[in-house]
Image (cartoon, rainbow, N blue to C red; front, side, top):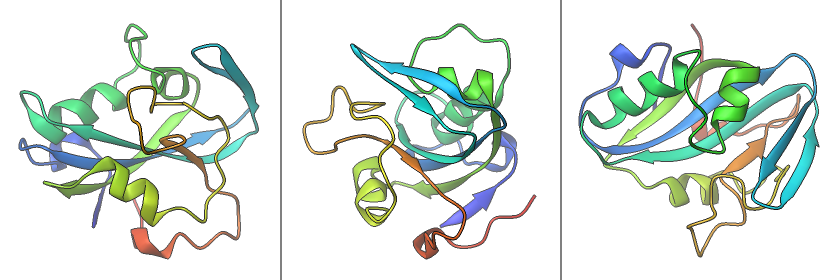
Length: 139
């Protein structure tokens, strides 16, 4: 997978992505009736982009500030900072979650309320955890 720092670097075709987010302070996040206090640190959100504009458009929305809150992930993108994303053109978000199964789930149902297979599409990436399946990231 390729790591990108800006949405403009993503293709306009569909696929999956793993968004790298950093929270400097704890955040009370909600997913339906569930909530959890997310500690400051790094998080990975796995999503898909199948609509018009594909990965470029979806990542552009995630990386933009001041948007209306439409999806669960908007809580984190507005409270923290998006440090980049790994992209998988033509890929599947659930396959990304399975590949990162060693990472802890901080809030069940987050980003996966319409997914029958995944417990959550948000994962916590603690310091020292490998997540080598993603590859290097640097902006």
